[in-house]
Image (cartoon, rainbow, N blue to C red; front, side, top):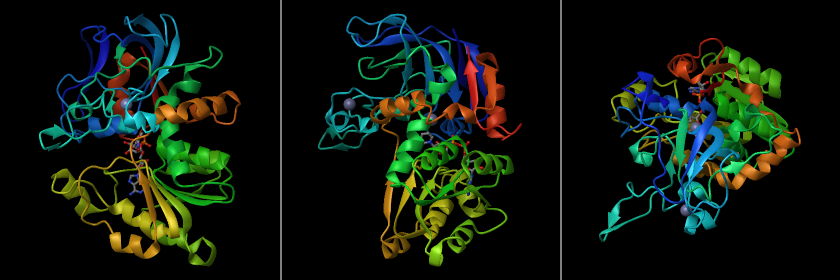
Length: 387
Ligand SMILES: NC(=O)c1ccc[n+]([C@@H]2O[C@H](COP(=O)([O-])OP(=O)(O)OC[C@H]3O[C@@H](n4cnc5c(N)ncnc54)[C@H](O)[C@@H]3O)[C@@H](O)[C@H]2O)c1
Ligand SMILES: [Zn+2]
Ligand SMILES: [Zn+2]
């Protein structure tokens, strides 16, 4: 089959690789009909995620038709049209029972520390996301093996197009988890750092929940413009102003906003020193946006972090966070938990996540898709690929 594979930083290629086969009785093989490139894939593409190996197949936002089922699969059958969460969860362990599927303790055995000769549980395996996250081949391919098929794939009603439901695999639940963690409700004030797909869909969810004022911070003018037009967000260019100061000045009594969402993560731009230190791997992550978040949020507010972080941050202002009495919520998304309610919101026409798509390309041209999305060329917001 054809698949998008990794060959080093900024070198991905569509190649012919072996077809996936059923390995466990509860596996299925899916024929992919649509797949997307995620901002998380850009961390891989830039060579920033450890244990990413030559030939690894990327892709964790995908959907398709069930082609083959293992002998223990009961929840789906050949021919079903399904969407697949990027988090691989068993549905049965301690964490899955708590609906914390990104913390599933059975699908990624390789990562936890060892105490008393026992490995402490690590979080769930992810599709196409390095050997740190399980080394499971991803779905930017013609076919993909889906483990835990009695817990993962969700059937979709035939009436909804692939484009409408594809983002239920990752970025829509991620945005939803971010705004619900941020306790956004009617009348809330919110600042979102990062106007990429996750930031934009966070704005869409916040608007639907009745947020009164949404600030959107970025430096890509076309993304800021879209956030203003589509979601009524107040655009803030972090290269033109100090974004946190601007936000504070535009809230009542200079209090700051009720909540802030960091939809950027460890590769945040804006601090030359921290970018250098993270490139040299002397620092785990740039703290530049977390400092902005702590500054922009009001006392007693929430900093909600869907953006991916890794390793220590020395410039994390814990004292300021303590002084303001802040709550921090973060982590990989518990997709399985949020997916059904979000599917309903799409069916009811309350959410239309496909609106952010700008590029529809063939899987064969995936390498070019990565280049365009990474360089923010052609006003790119989101690329979807069809095999
Ligand atoms: N928690 C999860 O489960 C989960 C799921 C999906 C994506 N993510 C993460 O969410 C983050 C965003 O993903 P995306 O697809 O929107 O990516 P993206 O790369 O398209 O968007 C990031 C945006 O942040 C902007 N930015 C960079 N530095 C900034 C700064 N200092 N201030 C303001 N804006 C800045 C960029 O210009 C860009 O528009 C990534 O870290 C991704 O890995 C996490
Ligand atoms: Zn993703
Ligand atoms: Zn589990």
